[in-house]
Image (cartoon, one colour):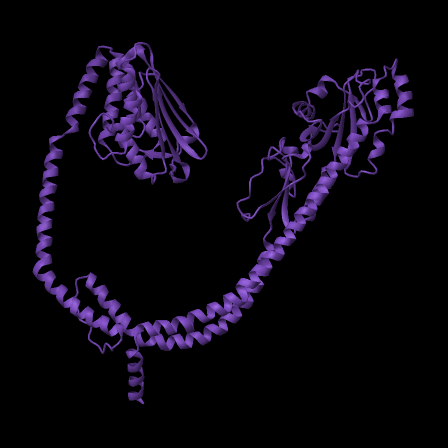
Length: 602
């Protein structure tokens, strides 16, 4: 029995490794993937997704139609009022007294406007405004007073060039002036009859937002709906806290972080008064998730049965080489620790056996090479490294920055005693500048730290040029916490002072700005110096991409190359200059590639 087991293992070991992998792949991997994925996963996933997508489209279209009908109903009432000639005549009449107006009101005006509300349940109220001061305000008729003209809804209508305006706004309640409520109104100027235009007349029809809210809530099993105006403000949503009111303003729509990326957007209508209005639907995901989980459970049960069958077959194939591969792996790991032990076992005649034989030959040769050649070479390299390290120490010892700082401190004491205030400040700035240059600890620093260093340099230049030099900083405070390569702004400013302003007879100005520009951090250095000719500008641009480190554009080239290396050639770097008008150097870094300082701004 023992001999039969050894013989069976030997036969398996003699099978070429390619055939073993082929059998493992076909029977143990390919067959289950084909059966499970082709028969169930692909077909059922597509069916479930298509069904839910249809349900979402139906839900979104149903809600859109209802909301569109609500708004169109209000517009239809507005048009009806605009063509009511009797209403025009009553509003154009001058009334001698309130009693005269009340008589006309009882006869003609009392139910003329409100009669539209019972048949249009989405209308909350209808108001007609006029600057005819003989009309007593109340019921549905109001004067166009200064208070009305200063209201948000009137300004909204006034700013629009359309004849009919549908607008959302907030307004204090008449019953409680301390409470602000959201409104959605249809506004139209009543000017259809040429002979009846003595007074300005305006119709305002307030729609019931609760009706629209009910439509949106009705569909929340499928979608989280948002009614958004042309300014991308949320007018109505299932969450009432996102619809104006107590917030004093309608919030701007932002896609929730937990929402699925498949957001459905549909326009409310094509009319001019709803142009830009959208209904946005964010899928809930629960229905699709449940259906997918049920399908996955079914597939899992099927896959489990197939896996049991495949596992038994794969085990037989893997058992023949698993032990030998592990032995080979352990001995290869020993090689990394300079232990070159041979593998002593029955290798077999397949590819793994040949690999073990080759490994034994390789380890024997490596052991001989390391003992006779490699160790001697390592000793030689170590000696050379020690010599280089010693030379570096000698060079570093020749440059002792303490002597420079002590000299500056001595000058500073003399200037302080003699009240040389300007010189004292400049020496302090120069000392800080030199310390920063000599202590290059990190390659990336915050914009705030870079600007501190820049201001020290600018103070020195200001002392140098006196009244002929001014500088301006325009910095976005939000940018101070982002990190940029060290010394990426100062060389640009130094070039502006050195090459741009020295030859200027009048006042030289350098402007430095750091701002956000469309998802990028933009840094700009601009001067009003002598500028450059087109030939000089082309020469500098060519030198920036050259490997030659000589010339007068080393500073700009170093900044450009470091930005390219740090941000994978995704930085926009530009130089613009005109002769006798100045130079503008700028670069923009994608914010997604930048780091932020974890420490607070100081």
